[in-house]
Structures are given as structure tokens and as C-alpha cells.
Length: 165
Image (cartoon, rainbow, N blue to C red; front, side, top):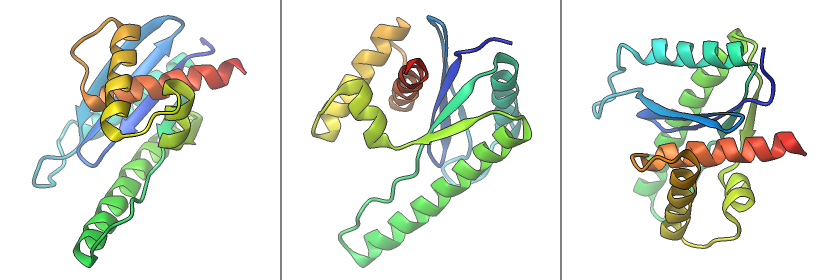
């Protein structure tokens, strides 16, 4: 069993992006959870199971981005925000459940925590996303990464930094 392997996960209601850092080698991918109408993809459970089996086989520690509840400026926005928060909590629960079943340690990290550690102090969503993309593409030598995949890479980088302390 290998040690020092980290997996960063950035999950949203519809997709799970994961980045595995094994020494200096990167594996980055994402898989679908639900369709636009909210139906689950048949392969979702298999994909999540395969990810946790891989983590178990590698002796990896998973770093999972925490769920954030943004402020809403209206009652309608507040209701939509709470629904999104509830869905993200469901996704987090699915990931934590599979990890627990496979004995995979998971550390939940806040978005602000990994962003400041990996990207530095940056203000503005567009600048954060651009820096995450630049860093992830440089480190993985890939130019085809989605926004969520870039975040997963940065979360894994955060995990690797934490493991070295």
C-alpha cells in the first residue's frame, strides 16, 4: 500500500470532479451524478464506488471541499440557495458514506482555506477561477480541465501540502 497519495474532490449537484496526486503523477477526471432534470445517471454509484476502491487500494487520504451556504438577497433567492445547500449536503453524504464503507479517511476543507493556501490571497471569483485553472493546467500538463476539475486539482494540492507538514 502506498502512502502520501491524496485525492481532491470538488462535487456539485450534477458532477463529481476528482484529482489524484500520487507522488508527481496526476489523474484527473469527473463523472456525472444527475441530469439537468435531476435524474441519477445509472453509472454514478459505480463511479463513486470505483473512486473509493481506488482510494482504498492506494491508501489515499481524500480531501473533500466543504459545503458552503451563500447569503441570498431575496426570499426567492434564499429558498433556491437552501435547496442547493441541501442537495450539496446529500452529495457530500454520499461521498462520506462510500469512504466510510471502504475505510478511506476524508478531511473536509473549506473553499476559502484551500484557495488561500494554494492560490494566495485573491479577491474576485473570476480571478480565483483563472488562477486555479492556470495552476491546475500547469501542474497536470493538461489544457482540457473543467472548472471543477481545476478546483479538484487545487484541493489535492492543498492536501499534499497539509500531508507534508
